[in-house]
Every structure is written in structure tokens, then in C-alpha cells.
Image 1 (cartoon, helix red, strand yellow):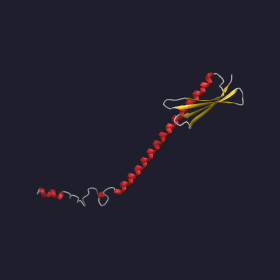
Image 2 (tube, rainbow, N blue to C red):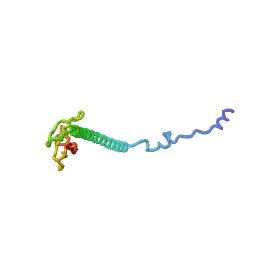
Image 3 (cartoon, one colour):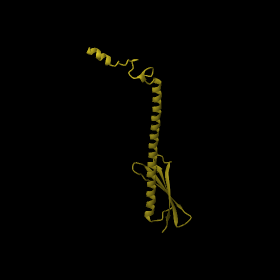
Image 4 (cartoon, helix red, strand yellow):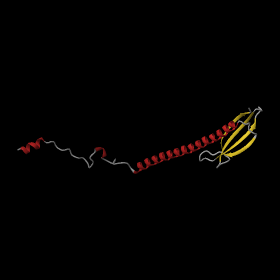
Length: 146
């Protein structure tokens, strides 16, 4: 008798309608199609390619900026040396090596007469030794004859 009483009070188990546990998985939507995966890979590949190009461009700009900074230091060093000599510079042009670190540079100093006889115009141009036709920077200064 106890057995019958337990059976009458127990709830019926829900029936499964398909082989899927979750109802959202029922039907044809079992995952991504091959075409969807390929499109996603193309999008990710394009984004990675663009980011690599941007990083390469930043690296190139960084090297050019470093070279320009080193060339500016070389030109400024030469102009300071002209001022510290405390001699009126002779008119003419001369070239000399002016390396900065591992960067090989060539400086060209050109002293020109100015309209004022007490002043001389000193121009210092800095070139890359590997590409002598490429001027990196040119600085100009007036020197007073004291």
C-alpha cells in the first residue's frame, strides 16, 4: 500500500522532444559555417596586416627622427666651436667628418661675407655619409668680429 501512495504523489518526468539538451540548439544552427569562419579570418588577417604596416611606419619615422636629431647636434656643436674659438672665421668652405654615435655624418662649413663688414655668416650643413647628396639639416649663424 505504501508503494501505491508514493506513485500517486510523484510528479511525472518531463519528456525530451529531441536529442538536444538545450532548446536553442535544436534545428540546423549547430555552429558556424565554413564561409562564416573564412570571412572572420579574412577580417582578422586584414586588421593584423594593417597594424603591422603601421608599426613598420612608426619604426621608420623613429629612425629618421633619430638621424635628424643627431645631425642637429653635430651642426650645433660646430657652431658652438666657431663661437668658442673667439676668432673671426676665414671666408671659404670646408668639409669634415662629424659622427654621432654609430651614425656616420659629414659636416660642411661655409663662411660667407655679410653686408655688415663686422659680421660673417657661417652655414653648417650635415649630410649622411652613406648618401652624400642627402642633406639632413642646415644651420646658420652670424659671428661678430670683436
